[in-house]
Amino acid sequence: MHGGSVSDVTTYSEVPSLSSSGVVVRILELVHEAILTNVVWTKRDIYYRDPALFGKQAVVDRNVDDIACTFGAPRSFLNITAAAKGLVAGAFRLHKGDGSEVDGLSDREGILIPSMRDVLSVSMNCVQWIVVIEKEASFRCLLASGFWDKLATQGIMITGKGYPDISTRALLRFLSSPSPQNGFMSPPVYGLMDLDPDGLAILSTYKHGSFALAHESAALVVPEMRWLGLRNAHLTDQDNAHQAQGLLSLTSRDRRKARRMLEYAAFAEGGGEPEWRREVQVMLMLNLKAELQLLETLPNILADMLEDDKEKPRVT
Image 1 (cartoon, rainbow, N blue to C red):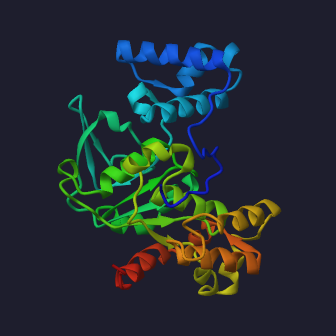
Image 2: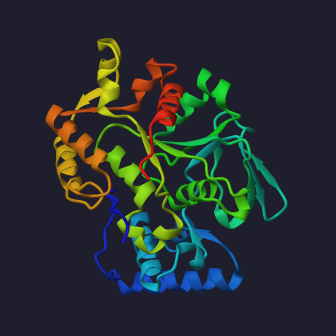
């Protein structure tokens, strides 16, 4: 079992129970059709094949994941994928099965992350780091900054726009795990998230996986991922004007989620992420959270964070 993500998704302690039999049978019919015709559908495509039966998109999403988990197979084996969501930019070139290429520096606002079914290999010899940004707004802000002007040819930035989809997690794993397809590259991966319970839960999803997709975790997790920030120390390092930017009080939901997180394996006392546990405890004590907008007032902070992390000793 993985380290225990705490994302706000349905969790399964054992094989999930399938809901309405009519919905399940219809989805299985569509899966069978997709496999026979060698067509890949998104969950959205499936919903629109029979919206009267399904009622809402969430019903399709939940049952597709249940079916995949029951079969012990990734959704890609069912010829089903989520609609493209994440964005990526940087010093890489993806080589696709149809002979086309995707240049990671071709669009200043980032490119939509493709399905890994379409990717054969990647050229990324110049990549020294990968930074995963929680929010799309912060991702775009950094791409428009002087930081990116100076360092775009040295790294890769990715955002899953909140809790990441499978395509975003699969690409991050592909780029960061050494293999013949990526030239045996393994650049360090950093997570840059809001300092709040959801930010840490998203970090945990990338690093340890999610309960809802536990059957796919081995192919999606990035266990060497490092937490770059935001941390409580980043708040006290800045002057009062900067601290005020992006600082908020925890909501009741935040406090409930933070307390639950302390019970999960990664965050538990004696668990695998003692630093995460300390930060959650400080967050609860101060009753404060911070958003990534804090970075927008500090033009050099991301470069400084990367440099500081390189100098930290690694525990092996």
